[in-house]
Length: 277
Ligand SMILES: Nc1ncnc2c1ncn2[C@@H]1O[C@H](COP(=O)(O)OP(=O)(O)O)[C@@H](O)[C@H]1O
Ligand SMILES: [Mg+2]
Image (tube, rainbow, N blue to C red; front, side, top):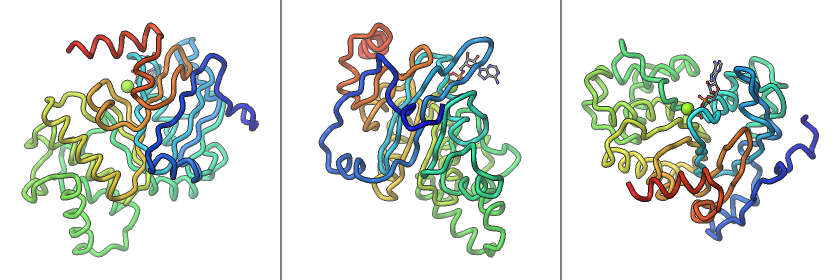
């Protein structure tokens, strides 16, 4: 399962040429941040993933798309070590998750941030305390004033006004709650962000504003991002590359404009239906 050859694209997968942006050329020359090879997952008596392989390079924003139940959320859980795959390999920053000890995993956790669809904020804590939580856990020696400064900085980076800090999550709009969760995901200065449907449930204006914030963060902090989305505007406006999951396999992996042209029934229905919305 985990030999070198298993990282080849599965049969039938279309690998598309990369675009020619300077960033992407640079990215191709550096080591992958995420490597998924021949990953398999069995759930409810079926193979939800049946040989999924892809890589993410530094500075890329990659969108993972697929129908409801195609295994996007399960895959994100596997990438962050919350669930073990039934086969294949996941490497983050060159390290095989399955071979890592508890301490090494804990250290690795500081290098990525998570924004899960339902991984909401702690509802009984103020926004500032939510953002401070990972700092308290991972950097307990940080003095309270310094921690407060870091929290303020993260809230600002995520595009929240100063007065949001002392509010309870229930007092914020949906868009602001997502931003607060983003601030928390950024607390430990991760190099990599995993976002599960970050703009779902937001009105179109808040969704586009969220995308712009993300773009600025990626460009200024050099983050690498993997996000799942149903939002075609995020796909066109934000993603450098799109990976399509279908029936347990990656059926396309390339720049959005190229994947959008592929003659495959699911891909057509995905892009055509939404183009009319
Ligand atoms: N904890 C679980 N136990 C059993 N089946 C699960 C579990 N989590 C997800 N599944 C199943 O795995 C499949 C993929 O789910 P998911 O990754 O949530 O899909 P997506 O995020 O692409 O909509 C679904 O068929 C779902 O029912
Ligand atoms: Mg999901």
